[in-house]
Image (cartoon, one colour):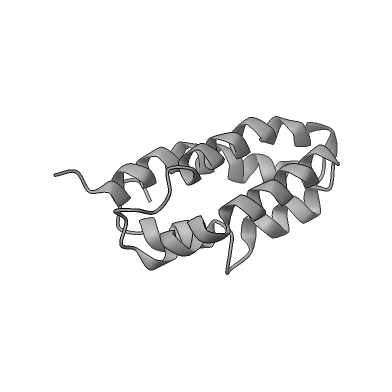
Length: 109
């Protein structure tokens, strides 16, 4: 039986590996903010799968807040508000920190 958490973490790893440096980079060059929108869409695609079958509490917490957080991040990026997008991304209670906790023992994390 496949570990669903490991499967989801494997899906998220390349997205977050691409998103993190670009989100840092756009703090100094807002003109590239919209380049992050496809990555937000990829995060959203994983989030839409829900948390059923995943027991990791941090993952379940991220799923519970992901729709509003990703909506706000997308809006911020469309508006060129890269600082707000970073704050949403890095938020300790709703951001990708939760995915880091949930996926910490998965391959590549």
